[in-house]
Image 1 (cartoon, rainbow, N blue to C red):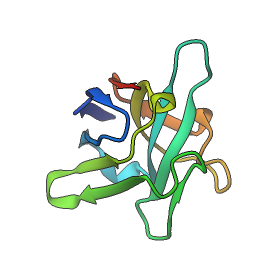
Image 2 (tube, rainbow, N blue to C red; image 1 turned 30 degrees about the horizontal axis):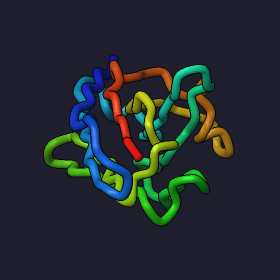
Image 3 (cartoon, rainbow, N blue to C red; image 1 turned 120 degrees about the vertical axis):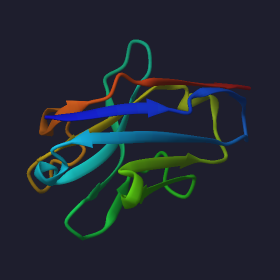
Length: 125
């Protein structure tokens, strides 16, 4: 089992920044991909960014490319999401996810077995 706990959400004005953190614990050796998803009211959960824990690149959704950065601190078993130049359309509940999605399905919700409880991000114009 893997436990994920997000923190760092809040309210910010457009153009501002926030950094989310996802602390992971448990049997982390089983995890192949770590990701951040988000879900706005009335919309489907969508992948924001993800990376393979076994090497390889980092990927971003087109809507956040150049503004968001995912990083990790292996010593703390923590994954971060730095969000800059925030826009009102970035407002959503943000979720950390971990799992073993098949290649090509890293942005698919169904590929992830473990989820955090979510942290709210609100961007005002």
